[in-house]
Image (cartoon, rainbow, N blue to C red):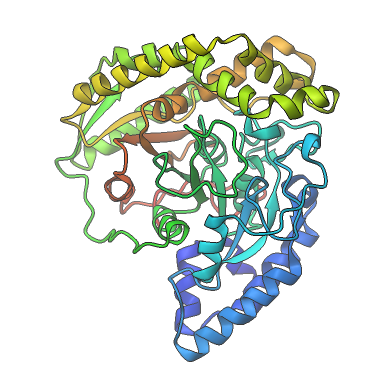
Length: 455
């Protein structure tokens, strides 16, 4: 049963379908692993033992009757602590929302549960989802699987750690400026940022509603494809016979490589060489719209975030992590006229960006230009915190600003990801691009395997 902790969600689903894996035994295996793990309290806010076993029992009965509802029916999953769950505290990593207990599941959790996914519990996150680092001294800071003294990435920090440490085969997070892709990349996972508006946000605590998205963090591209279908209640994309032969990729040669550290750069270049050997055409392209859009970030993100949460923040500012409080309050200085003008300019930049990249299957970038920062230094050095947070979010935010969907894949270099960005609503095309035949492995002390492009 311990081997179940190292298997992909898709493989576990197949085992249930064949009768080789009992969903109840599978849920118990994961619950026992969580209860025994030294980092459990830093990863999970709450473990829903009763709910998990009840849902697993129902899945087991369906499996016996040949009535499974989806390929992931009976597979356990963790949920970021901003998805409303009935009778279970949902606090978005903030003391401002302490003891907030919703009456009903959010829509996306209801949809996934109806398709048989088993809820293991809720995971820690950056406060109110407003940081790419995952450092949260107010509640808990999950560790990075490759360096336990470093952050795991945010804001879906616990989501990534739950999968990376073998405490969930699949996690659901959110991505407003990189919050799925950064922790996925830093923990050598696959992370899918979906298109804004594709998956329901009903019952999901907001940060910036016009940028917020829901997406999975997982062990394989196949897992991401099945999770997407489960989250939106659709049919999974067919990943068979996917090939990179003749596919055309553009390297974003604007902004994405500024101040990049050595390891992410080497990992990216090695991954690009691998793509070329597999028959892909890869070209460097100047995309000035990316830099221009990034310059609008402070106006667009901070102002909407502060407008969303200002009443709660100003009623109890001392309850917040000071770095997050400063980021929110920076939005108070933005005028309504500047906000409207920024959106008009972003709409123009999006149109120009897609005109520049129309002949390519995807745009390529390093998922993050930096490695996971040290927790102690983040606590002690304000300038370091601000600089690392902005750099962590820089590349991923390009996809959010352009309204794109994006996928981060492990490169084989610890905590270094390769990001593919596609136009809105092209998730199925994106997932087929991410599908590949070669699997890479990298052993670490606490986990089964690190770099995997595909199950």
